[in-house]
Length: 426
Image (cartoon, one colour):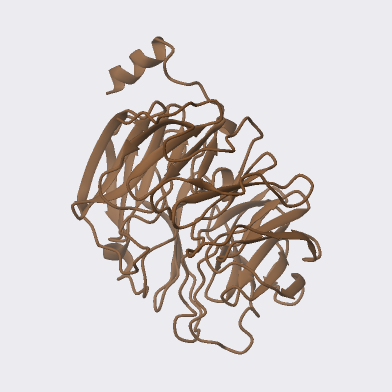
């Protein structure tokens, strides 16, 4: 396979890509959900406007990640944890079966919910079974481990949702559940533990459980891992795992069942935290130390927000898509609403998080209907009837290199602004 990749590169068939052209983890660079401006598609379907689509075996709701010519995706095929690499032309490069997996508990869940992460040398995958596997880009397995066997059983009531991230050269996992909860950093080259810190708060039933993904902020030249879950937002030093600050006060009445699914969104200064199962929003500064529950809170709003889709922060604004399809733009520094709009009604909800490519905001409903909104001057819906893909979509879409990658129940679609139908199948 190494020879094959080298040959493709020598023939000019591998797409050269700068780091900004890649989509290395869930929701892209730094899990921001923001892509560079480009010529992205507006109107398409499961057949029209599709450059290619490929049958994906098994079940999974993870999003694809992209590095150079390769697209990496996880699935559960015949109850086996599996990772697949496709070329940017939709052709399979390699597939690896890793071992027995676990099935999904929720009707929307699977054993392959977390998205992969890559640093351009290693591809790290994570599954509900607790399995973590690392491959090089050619598909050679470098190591495998199991977090549940190493550190304790999974006690989440529902399916694993947290994706791994990269921080300070390590791959980091957040486990926030009933009982033993922690952050752990592993060396991507060897799988050896670099650091592990307890992140456990005594909360009412299920309020200690989180399905969110951390993000990395650069605060005064220091990499800080910002994590939302168990009614706390925390900042840990990416090199050592040391707790720098923590913010509480997100569950003042000690409510039970306040598990969190939507991750926070942020830049290097402010995090937007959705909480209370879609009823509240808060803005928190990221430059504090110690207990910043009071000092770090810059605003709080009782407002309609997301329970599942993660918001987007860009510039001095942030965008929120509710589960029911309402889109809000708010001021990052005050939380005040700037404008709002409602996507066309449907029976289904939005589980995929929105993504922003230039001025185009993409949202995909569970029934596989995708909408595109121009947000440059407010709410300008570009697709009144929606773009019907013809199958269920839970995974967050990926806008990269003027294409839109969407993982559905059955297919991985590659949609391009200049692509003509009918779709080519593998």
